[in-house]
Structures are given as C-alpha cells and as structure tokens.
Image 1 (cartoon, rainbow, N blue to C red):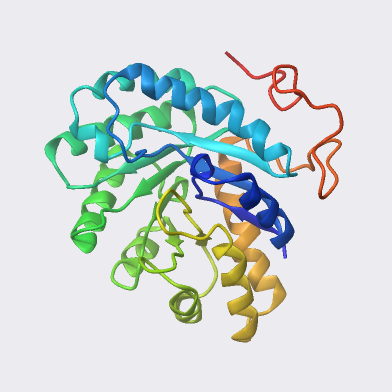
Image 2: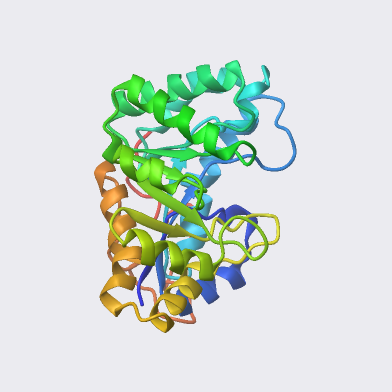
Length: 291
C-alpha cells in the first residue's frame, strides 16, 4: 500500500509518528498551514511558521523517508483577526517557493464578511500563481458553508478541477462532486468521518475524485487513518487498485497540477535510519529552494 496523505499537520506530530507512517506505506505528505490553537498576534509569527513548514519540516520528514509538501494561506479562523490580515501581502511570495503545492487552507470558519473577503482574495492569488486550492468547510452549518464555498469558487473563475473541498461528510459530498471539484474527507477517531462511513461513501459514489486524509493535528487524531481506511476498503471488497487510486493516484493527480510535487525516493534513506550524512543547513532537502 502506497500513501500520499494529502492533509496532515506534521508540525504537531512526533518523529515516532513519521516512523510509523513510513512503515504503514506513507511516502509523501502535504501539510496545510493552519491555526495553531493559540491566536497569532503579528505577521512575523506567520512568516516564521511558513518558513518552518518549507524548511525544517521538509528536513524532518526526509529523515524518515517521507517527502513533505505544504500549502500556504491565511486560514479562515484567523481571517477574522485584524492583526493577521497583513500576512496577505506576504502570501504571494511564499506561493513561489519549492514544496508549495496549493493555496490553503482557505474557506470558512464562521462565514463572516471578513472570511468572504480573505477567501476571494486568496483564490485570486491561486489563479495568478497557477496553483490549486485546498478549501476548509466550516465545522458548523456545513451544508450552507459548502454551498457558499462553491458559489465563491464559481465567481472566482477558478476551474473546479483545481479545487479540493475538504472535511466533507454525507450531507455535502454530492454538492462538491456535482460542481466538478475534488472531494476530501478527514478520518478522525471521534469526529468528522471514520473508516466505516468512508467505505460506505466510496461504495455509493465510487473512487473518482475522492481523497482521504488523516488531518492529524494537536487534538485527538491518528496519523495512520489513511492506512486504516485502505485496510477497511480491502476488508469491504475493494480491489488493491481501488485503494491505490484513493490513497495515492487521486491526491497525486490533484497536487501535480502545481508542478511542484516531488515523489521520488529520499536520497540515501534506508528504513530505520536517517539519510547518510544529512545536516540541516546544507541538506539537499533545502538546497536549491527559491527565495
């Protein structure tokens, strides 16, 4: 089983998680920039975070044989904080850096006018940078939020095939699929989707444009939920090819639209040991990154 986890917050995970993920088949990840739990109070805290995603976290993942990519954005929750809005001026230069495969997470948290403005502005940035977009649907009023999300995407002129609408469930998946966008599902221990419901969703809608992630973060979550979903699919009678489509080929097809996805094996890596002779500052993981 080969896995690209298309939405996982590795900044909040341990090296033990990286090791277990590699053993379960994870060979690449995409880490969306997100709210850290503690409100940020300045633009500098965002840029330090973006730099860490594109530097340190790529290096850390490579030590365990995993290719790390990121999506960059002002997230919906912090779009409402005027102290954070100035980061919008910084986002475009980060969209040009190596390892950035989408704009995200963007979308809605509370569906405020401020979120409308920031969402629309970052869709324009995505179009200008030639990047796809990862969209966060709100935890509350999810159906209404999804309708509003798809309306804003249509108004932006961004092709729906360049949009991944995430955190879906049984109430809104049909809307996203009918719109021509990619459908994303976060598999959690207690909330959002679980493996059993995800398998039922795949049985109903098929595997085309369906993307599964663990979205593991600082809360109760499981970075192996992608692998566990693959195992549940096999147990339910899905073929190994169908599992490969959902866990590898679909997320690869979506993020390949960026032109920045790197999937070749990490040089020098062998399971159970870091790449030989790797040092952070001079690492080939960072060498050649664009300013």
